[in-house]
Amino acid sequence: MNPKWVLLLSIAAMLVVVDGQSAVEPRVKTVKGKKLCDKGWECKGWSAYCCNETISDYFQVYQFENLFAKRNSPVAHAVGFWDYQSFITAAALYQPLGFGTIGGKFSGMKEVAAFLGHVGSKTSCGYGVATGGPLSWGLCYNKELSPDKYYCDDYYKLTYPCAPGAAYYGRGAIPIYWNYNYGKIGEGLKVDLLNHPEYIEQNATLAFQAAIWKWMTPADKHQPSAHDVFVGNWKPTKNDTLAKRVPGFGTTMNVLYGDLVCGQGPDNESMNNMISHYLYYLDLMGVGREEAGPNEVLNCAEQKAFKPSSSSSS
Image 1 (cartoon, rainbow, N blue to C red):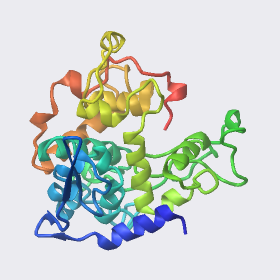
Image 2 (cartoon, helix red, strand yellow):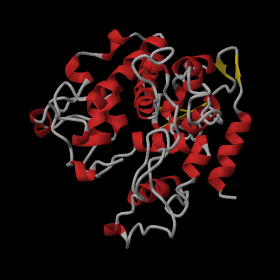
Image 3 (cartoon, one colour):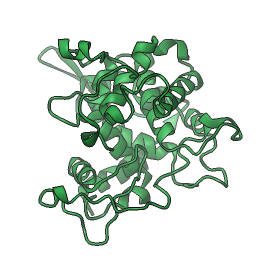
Image 4 (cartoon, rainbow, N blue to C red):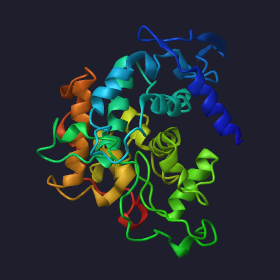
């Protein structure tokens, strides 16, 4: 078995939350005057970020259930697939890198809400008059239904050749399309997604892991990650300012989707749907939508894309 999967299964087995608090007390050491911590299964590897509250400290099972209240309704398309344990197990691999662990509890909750805002929007089967409201139907899908093509781009036949019979249609928490994206993400996760793209729709932990990898990883060496633009690690250049790109939720959409969503004006349905999910999740998590910031931070309506749409496909 792949060592990565042994680790994930071990983490899942150790996932215990008692009285709303992480079951693991942090180990602490100081290296060159810097405090580093290790929290075992959830934040492992001696990181300054592990000294902060971790996701299971402030985001509980009941909150996950509230955010995705209709995902297991009989009419949903991935009943029984997505759950809290899969999310928290996947997130554990990235918390030492700052996912949900930069700053205090408040900052962590905002990042989790932002990430899940993308997830909820991209996997929703909600509509205007849906039971419980259209925003309660996130994680309704784990794959594209009735895809009409294989999403195999022969331009990448030398670097990410399509496997015989494999179809690279949308799968996952932030859906992955095209052979080259499965190849890149598979390399990042050390899982052979190029030859086995179906793994994403078969394992919820891997599906969340792939989505968090996309959130944490720049698509290009000259481009920030969605994580960096959201938490404030990214400092806009003069060109970014001229392109109206500013730190915040709006620019996470620019990073992940480019001009497929951004620079299309204020009425872009996909953009507004992601914003609506983010605000809704902030409310349900107890942060409050008023903490999301002004419109220029929330949306990307007037932003120029980091890269053109041909390079922004999921």
